[in-house]
Amino acid sequence: MARYVLRFGALAYLALLLLVPVGLVFYRAFEHGFGHAWDAVSSHQAVHALELTLLIAAIAVPANTIFGIVLALALVRTRFPGRGLVNAVVDLPLALSPVVVGLALFLLYGRGGWLGGLAGHGIKILFALPGMVLATMFVSLPFVVREVVPVLREIGTDQEQAAETLGASPLQVFRRITFPAIRWAVAYGVVLTTARAIGEFGAVSVVSGRIEGKTETLPLYVQSRFEGFDTPGAYAASVVLALIAIATVVGLRAFHPREETG
Amino acid sequence: MSGITVIDVTKRFNGFTALNDVSVAIPEGSLTALLGPSGSGKSTLLRVIAGLEQPETGQVLLGDEDVTSRPARARGVGMVFQHYAAFKHMTVWDNVAFGLTIRKRPRAEIKRRVHELIELVQLEGLAKRYPSQLSGGQRQRMALARALAVEPQVLLLDEPFGALDARVRKELRAWLRRLHDEVHVTTIIVTHDQEEAMEVAGQVVLLSEGRVEQVGSPRELYESPANEFVMSFVGPVNRLGQTFVRPHDLDLTLEPGAGSAEAMVERVVHLGFEVRVELVRDDGQHLLVQLSKEQAEQLELERGQIVYVRPSRETVFTP
Image (tube, rainbow over all chains, first blue to last red; front, side):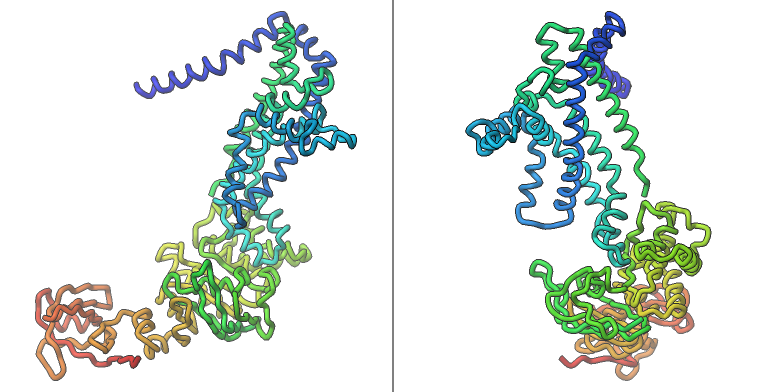
């Protein structure tokens, strides 16, 4: 009996908090027919916003994947002074409000900031793609590291050392032994990083300047439509974001249980 | 193939001295056991020879070559780890072929060699399996084939049977002995089990607290131990004041005789051919005696019975 109560409670909680609101977005988006929704998301601005969002993810995700693997290896396989501090700092983006991240970048690269002089040399960071990529990289940094570190700890160094005694160079050890052992963790981390990169609002909102058709990502587009009383447009774009999210979740499910046993 | 010479090696870990000025010579083609309690430095010594640890001072020679500063991958050693270190994402075949694939040997040669080795370690028919589908004993044989594939100058085994159950361990010991007779590669086996060392190795290096206590054949260690530690590590021992007596060097009689002491039977343990008798003297000292089944039957020992013990052979160590 208690089990059913527990199950029902969990399901009801999920339904109220997640499924109903997201379902409503879908309902509202298609309320006036599929054609309407399609028109809303195929407008020039919407398409540009989607393209920009994907472009940012396409830069930020590979960068954070490579960095994440290198950092995880450094944290688990080497000892260096300040390792504990680095380990803690990696989690900072999870704890820090994205708006604060955006403001920090603003202070650093803005007029009068330490690196504000770059703008004078024709390197535009704020209100342009570089700033938005930096903000996205900042907030999506921890995921690959956090997925890979425990797996590296678990596999230990025996396999790597065995490969070494068999004549493998450090690069061969990584390519043939370490990477295959962590690949599912990396994949899982990439999926989480991608989800975060595509959905990011706060930090990107601050550094982008929100110039319509120029520095407007899809989440920003949703917000601006909503504020402009174009609710059908906002709903339709939301559906696109939700579909990407659903694809991500399906991706997660596909990756995770397929670990080799033993 | 070559012998191994370790000269004055010292290795410290964060202030803990794992190896303290150790020198050992391992003859070419021998099977040598590094024996000692945990923390004695035996695994560290093996890893220094393999190149997986760098010593603070001292040299490691393989044959006549000083390999001290050479990385593990260039030393030509085959290593087997206690927990198999199987490449989990590769089949048995790919595990064994690994060293040859790395060396980019011709495909036909790899195929022939891997086939031979899989046969040598009796894993025919399991080549396409993954390590998770093998038993512990099979995994360790695979690891051995993998180490032998690159035709190592020396074979280093780090507690290779330590994670296996007693029966498999005994089987693999005998099998390793036969394998060594077949391939003759200079082999070092690290173990904390004196029975394993005595059974498998032709030469035993006994270590304690980072130092070599004694080097010799199993028989030399057992019959002429260099000190008290060696004597008590390689077999059970009774201490009588300053003298040490092996349990089978104590004679039991029912009547008192010259030089015999009175004791009471506390426990009789039948282990097939061997019978262990635990005695207690009236001064509270416990003694262990090993008898053959026949001797025990003649004496008809029972708990609480009074018997007389006399050492037939005893050892005294002069400090």
